[in-house]
Image 1 (cartoon, rainbow, N blue to C red):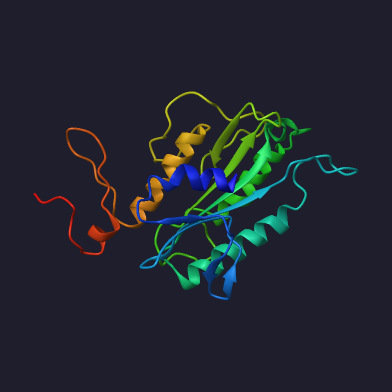
Image 2: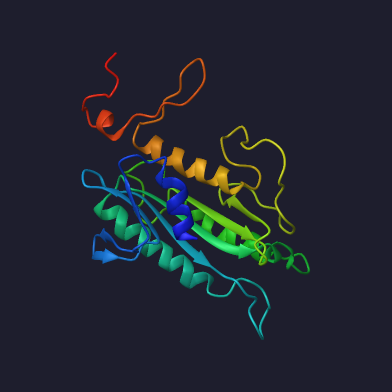
Length: 228
């Protein structure tokens, strides 16, 4: 999945090297990172960390909530290590769960999916480089079918159903700008790309329509390729 995301985003991030070699410089030296977009000038520009719970807990509650604390702590350690050294880096976390995790709530309790959203919510939404180091800019739950027939992404800042799958249709964004339905793979990539652009003040749209993001050289005050 890391290789697929790196390949899918690399064409949009001109001048940025994408790698899944899983190492990037943090405050405590080189650490593992599933997807690493870097430049010599910026260092780590965009990092994506992937976690997963693929099977139900056997012999216990038979839910997808085992290793919840360990995964959360690993994510916070990663985010803190990179942000302390490179506070402008955009860090995105994705936890993969099967769609089955949306419907295992019993006797009024939330599903495993809903429990994960509730658990990870406090550690996402880092809007400024001065915000907490152990908070991710964005965190998503990647819901998938084991037969690879479907893959969708849920923004943990959105409100999940207590039980059942989130809605698939409707407007992408609510009035507060949060995603209010499941994202397709392409919508997920587009959202991550624009988070990176906003952090680097690179978003730009013409009144006639169409995006024309600023390049790294233009952001740094270099010459534009446009002679006009």
